Amino acid sequence: AALVLLAALSSVAGQSAGCPEGNSFVSGGGSTFCKLGFMTFWDCHSSCTGISLNLPCIQRELDNLFLFNHVADEVEYIWTGMVQEPASPTADAGWKWIVGCPSTFTNWAEGQPNDNNCRDEKVSMLSRAKEGKWVDAEPSREDVACVCQQKGSGGQWGDSDDNDDDVDEEELAAQRELVARLKTAEQVPGCAVTESDITAKEFTSPQGVAYYDTGFRSTFDMCFEECRGRGWTLPMPLDAAENNFLGMIRGSITTRCTTWLGLYQAEDHSAKKGWYDRNWAGLGESGFRNWAKGQPDDDECVQESCSVINQPNQPNLEWYDASCLSTEPACVCQKQAFLDPTVQSQPVSEHDRKEKTVDEWAASELPRLMNDPHTKGVCGDSHWTEPAFGITLLCLVGSVVLNCALLIACLFKRQSQRKTAAVCAAPFP
Image 1 (cartoon, one colour):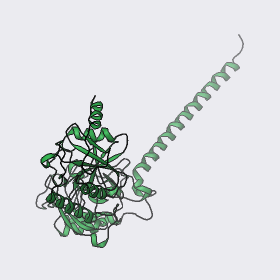
Image 2 (cartoon, rainbow, N blue to C red):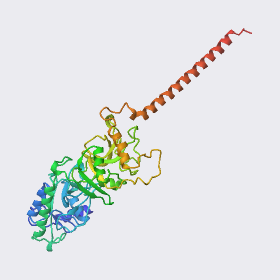
Image 3 (tube, rainbow, N blue to C red):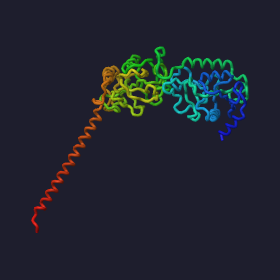
Image 4 (cartoon, rainbow, N blue to C red):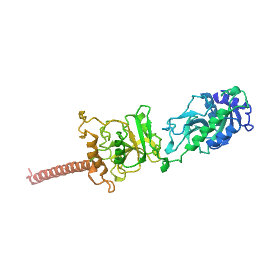
């Protein structure tokens, strides 16, 4: 019924000023729209304002449903007027409607916005595949439909009365200024940056945890020492919300790509063991984990005793083990006081660390992590003693059982032969 109503409404629509004939439609909420074809976000904005119209200001579910149903059979995506402020620290921060739009309505798809694959996606579009919900996108995409919206009489959004003077000059100037800033802040897709892009920045999560993006990439020990010099430490997420904020920091070099965590592996363990709750470079404790499927795995027999969040070109907020000697991960510090060495905490398990101060930890564990086998591989060394011992024990047990079975069979055969011989030797009655 809703689809029939929306189709009927579109058929009685009036023609918007400046809109090509036959391309103007009115929604059930009283908003007039105009279709202009496929183009980039920048071209769409210029085209809309060029005919005294605006990018869509969606204030209600009915308008969003109308846009989705009216063009769902024709296009995959439609640009909206929801944009992200330049220099927003995370993918989901700083979103606002284009200047002049009073809407507070949002309709993001699950997991959106997300800066997919490290892209700087700072504009939004309505998605047919997401059943009319929104996803963030790069403004340079050319496969997105441009649909403009017309204000009604008195310059009010959503009023169906026509008015030739739709765009207020001050609003238009402000819109163009915002679009110009978005263009200036536009980045090349991917994680690569130039030296001129690298700047250190500080961020605070909604949970109140402070982070510092140092602006460079390096090995685990170098990043630890950089953070330590500030009195901070490597990140230690305590829950999913903090993990997601850390993985989505978009300040300088990070851009939601691989970033060091403070979690490390204890000595002489197989890939999936030894990642204890107290094995954090800041001497803190956290039982939260967010390993990706199959992780940790010591990929290609390389000793990977350190951990990162995200992978290059795979910013999925999940964790991976990594060689502590890798120079790919970004250095992000977390503001967290080191444990007071005068306060002796009670051991929580047999795996409780011996080091009580950060200096002791740096002197003992850090060299061990950086000297773990790297180039030669670990498939045949002590790192695999646990599974090797299990296999050896299984073989020994199997051998004992087999030998016992053979011995019993042999004894049973001998006993049978003796009985047969005794019967044959007995005289006939």
